[in-house]
Length: 283
Ligand code: PRT
Ligand code: ZN
Image (cartoon, rainbow, N blue to C red; front, top):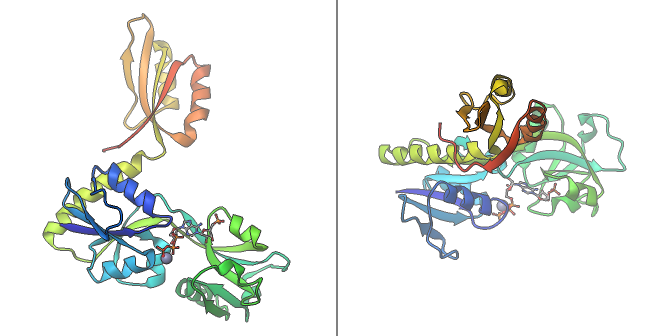
């Protein structure tokens, strides 16, 4: 039996539960429990605050955890980071009041910087030989400069809207973060076997994100050209239609490239284009 720790509530909770569900693991319905079991995979889910997940995994209270890389790095516990999960994407940045003239990192010399990530910031300033006064605060870091608690902040940013609405400007992007799967180092053989199965499923779900399945009809004489536009995984599937001279192509494509490719395909005669969602990609 594996035990995986995920965030009880907050930004990573929903995506973590969705990933588990898409991996074919259903959980008991009772949401208020600290621990829930699955009936179809030997796993139980432990709900924790994200701050406590790295420690729980390092100590073996949970075998696995889903948490932001920022928390893993900040806490510094001995855990293995296994795979990136493609959600909870953000960055950790330094920001200063927008009225300040900022030209280089040396601006921070001797300044007071408020953050909930003192360890990551200390390392960054150390690498860049900056001596600043790091003030650790637990929450609402973005208001620290306005109330005179700090000259600048180091915090998580995603859209940047919070910085703007607090009169701050992002001046240095220090690192990126996303949700990761972490594990207690050296799990026993039985758990490792289950973990390999779980990773296989998580990777199949993750791989299919942002991918689409495209079906289209095209004159057979243009199939070669169309294959250059849509190379697919190994190559596109090509079938002949009942109507003479016409073929059908099936291919997997990255969503970001979809519209550009469709325009190109239309110019070489593609018709009846269907775009379907892709649930899992098992290689
Ligand atoms: O209660 P618990 O301790 O479990 O949760 P928490 O409040 O500490 O964390 P939570 O739920 O806010 O975030 C969990 C994780 O989500 C973080 O550790 C990051 O890995 C990740 N994440 C992704 C973010 C954001 N995006 C994010 N935007 N965490 C926080 N934010 C904050 C940001 O600091 C800002 O204050 O959200 C606000 C909005 O951001 P903007 O830039 O879009 O305005
Ligand atoms: Zn937290």
